[in-house]
Image (cartoon, rainbow, N blue to C red):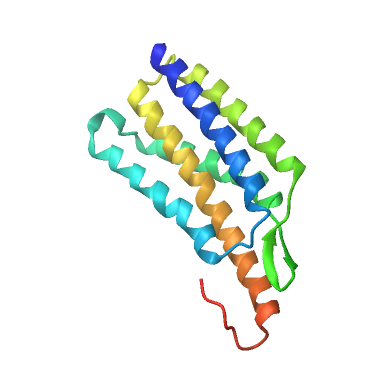
Length: 162
């Protein structure tokens, strides 16, 4: 139970950090690199699955990926870009913070409920998969939207790179 509480506190802190970073990010132009790097950095977490303690069954993997992808739809809907002063910026969305908080609360409730039937290590693995299954489609959608706007900025001959 202590691990559940500790991991929940860490999740709340990480969620708060994401909201803070997202709000600051809307003040600076975005780049393809800034969109693509977070899932790449997060992918290193997959190394946890080298240890049997964190391994999940195929059914748990599919469940976690599916829930993550469903959650990503809300993030995709609230992540829009705009062109300002010949640069691309992330539009501020008040809904984004509320959606992120809502998703975090749903994850905490799911974790509390599932911790009664699934070992802590497997549950940790499932929630990492859920988060990864959420961030990858979200960031891919953001990148595609960014590239579309970049094409509008650059015309037929792109000059900016990732």
